[in-house]
Picture 1 (spheres, rainbow, N blue to C red):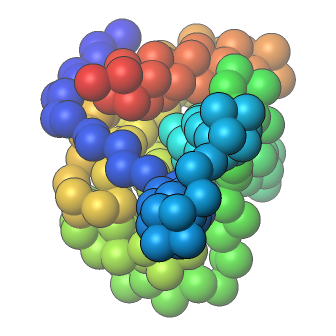
Picture 2 (cartoon, rainbow, N blue to C red; picture 1 turned 180 degrees about the vertical axis):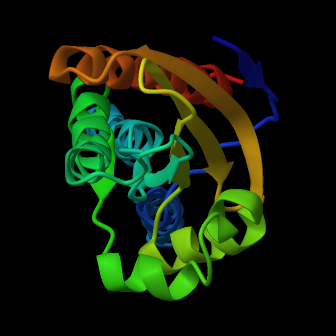
Length: 208
């Protein structure tokens, strides 16, 4: 299993609500000064508490992640069996659920037709991260996850996954997860491992 992580810095800014709170506090104090009515300490402290709560809300706003359906890249002698297609189709919902359990993420729903329209050929969004980022922007996501399920053998397969920063339009990290076997438990363990790695990357970036 190989993991490649490229780290860039993300700067979180206060939301519009926070800036509105700043303006309201400034205006309130300005009016008091004009009327020559000093603000009581209790009232000013209350305003500061409200302002702090708004800033905290902005800082803790849920990260929005869009998870695209996994593409099946089956190069075995008997490719794309119904069972393997069904297994691959289950991976995006499993990853969405796992991500929502490891952190307070908002999972952005992705319409299958919209993904199909953006993915002009197999592997297109997987290769062209700027195009995937544009789709993520249309969905209102902060991050978009593009993945392939590569199966070179009946005994094992791989999850190849890119975590793409929508704003920067570039891949921040790549994860390669090996799945030994095709049982449901094997798939679930691989997806859970992937979710933890994604959470670690996003958390590390958000702390910088």
